[in-house]
Length: 115
Image (tube, rainbow, N blue to C red; front, side, top):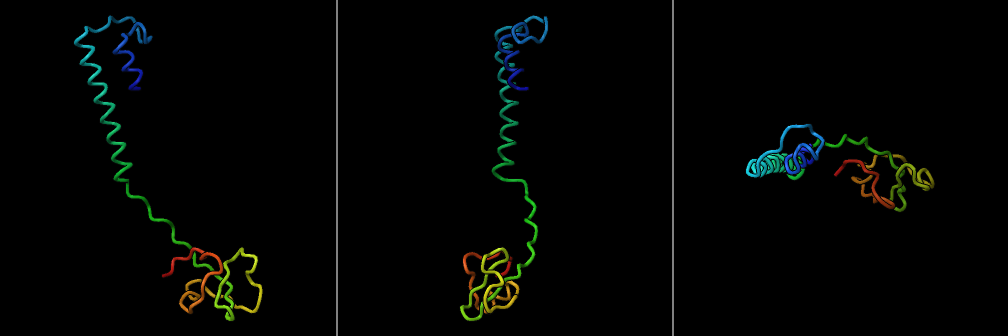
């Protein structure tokens, strides 16, 4: 929209295909260009402020606490989907419970929000 208007102001309505109205005088064209640029810059600055300052984002949805397979011999737990989930002499427990009891994740934690 701004580019089309700027093209119309600079080149006149004949070249932009906007109609048959006569072009503006040189001073009026300069003023019109400045006003169009100012409008564009104002819109760009508002957009930039929303990006930099940020519109308050919604908090991520609370993730359900993962059930892990804990191996008491090694004090390591495996997440669901792991090759070693439910393999060996272990027991099921929540990831938070496993962390409280001193278990460590085998590779990475399962993503539960417990600290």
